[in-house]
Image 1 (cartoon, rainbow, N blue to C red):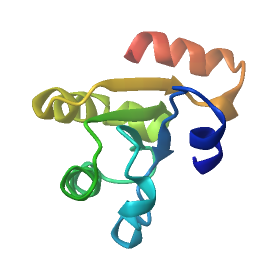
Image 2: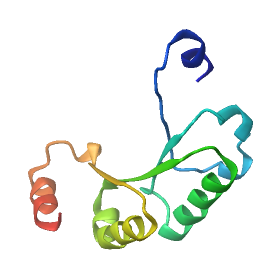
Image 3: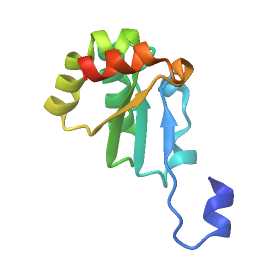
Image 4: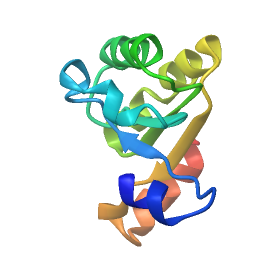
Length: 114
């Protein structure tokens, strides 16, 4: 981030995290970050809520987005993730499971579920 700040004129960047170390972050190092994307792939909705609350209280972030990889686990809780995002005003972004590649059955399941 320091290199981007020093060597560009107005370039924007974002920090993509699942917030694992959110309690030990030195927020002074991240004071210029305004938007943060949190991935819910491997955590509960309750844990995501806790981490996003910490981010909003301790940082200068003005926009947080939730990202969910559409694996079997998240497909099963897609409505709960969507409801959490909508109720709390967080933009939502969904992405396919890259490890499934071109698996035709996975593609059919996504179309049916999504």
